[in-house]
Image (spheres, rainbow, N blue to C red):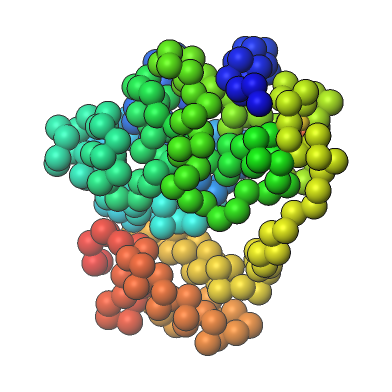
Length: 292
Ligand code: SF4
């Protein structure tokens, strides 16, 4: 099996999208913020929020001095707002432990709130130019198909890092390009539902294609629908708090017409438990704003 590196590098040179975090001098803080935002939100929704975020908080220390509730407000409708709180905590840690400079060392990055295997290595590779395997969902799918002949990857596993590492050239700069190219290929060509094999630089060597596209054995449950879900209720409560911030909202005025009162109460309790909201004196507010 020929390696993936050369065809990926050649393809990426022409096909890579022009995205803000790929531009020269974007910086480690910008890379870190973008990776937090991209964890569960599509690129086109992230870009305007990312620019606004970095304009407001151009350094970790700038964010660290704002109340965490401001981060939740600025996060707006990006979804999974715990990421805003984690990013705020990470900014405080970077200010307090690393003199305000995003660390370069993978273990130091992993020690920050909200940062896992993917984000730590993405920052070390894309912001600092070091050589590590960077493996996201898209990369895992490309490896599963092109190398292993399977339609979908299994659950994430540490082996994924070893598999990707085996594909990286020794040259540090080329290794970074292969990491980026594998992710890009999975995002725009080897997509989950409709891979465009005719446009794929790995078509000639793809094991899944050569095997005649055997179907996936992965029968994991599809993601639950959003409409009517607890997640929707949490989002609606948070929107109420964001709209009122920095003022608190009386508990009786939080979603008084929500169709399922027990679900609304559950949403409020879980937001408080997660630190995304604070309850006191029969009022609810975003965290970090002084009581009025
Ligand atoms: S040939 Fe098709 S299935 Fe194989 S890696 Fe390329 S796009 Fe994915």
